[in-house]
Image (cartoon, rainbow, N blue to C red; front, side, top):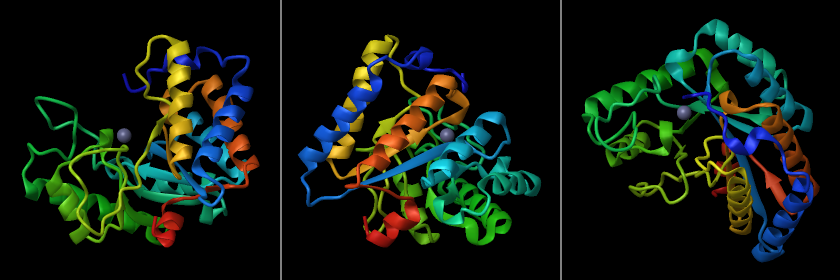
Length: 265
Ligand SMILES: [Zn+2]
């Protein structure tokens, strides 16, 4: 089911550009002129080469838009890293390569999927974090940035506590995720989901997506989640439209985790 495309991407609504403009203008008004809106894009499940991933990188490069990339350590090899790096080209300040789940597998028997959930013991979780971080540091060197995005946007309190001890500067989950992060570990949370949406009715999906976007931009912090394997032509067109509109609004800043950390967001 990894590659299932949400029904909203069957076709873009004809009045979409106007609706997006309206939604972002209202959001900026609500936020107030003195508050800048920080926006980041996070692409999950990165490591394997492919046409969709190449197209994603092409869009961000063309628009010079920053992108945070959550890489699955066990999927990465030196040759894959050389490939990814080749797509990224020289624009290294745009990218924030960081750590996703070690193998991206679910270990929970009951309840929601988690790779770093409460049912696992601390030493196993620590091993998966450490070996993942080591592999990314070895392959990526200075291009790696120690932020952890847990698969399915959730992890246990024990995992969050380990992150601080193991030198991670932040975690990235969904807005409102529990348990709360320990002091000193910011959560650069995502609050807009483009490709893992559950609505069956595209009209409802579009309404919800635009509302999410409006609420996120109103709140000064907007994290937009991307799953490139679930993108089709319409989803790529939309992404480009969104980036273009965001850049037109000078009160909005597109950032990556390094920038957010520098700002103390
Ligand atoms: Zn994932």
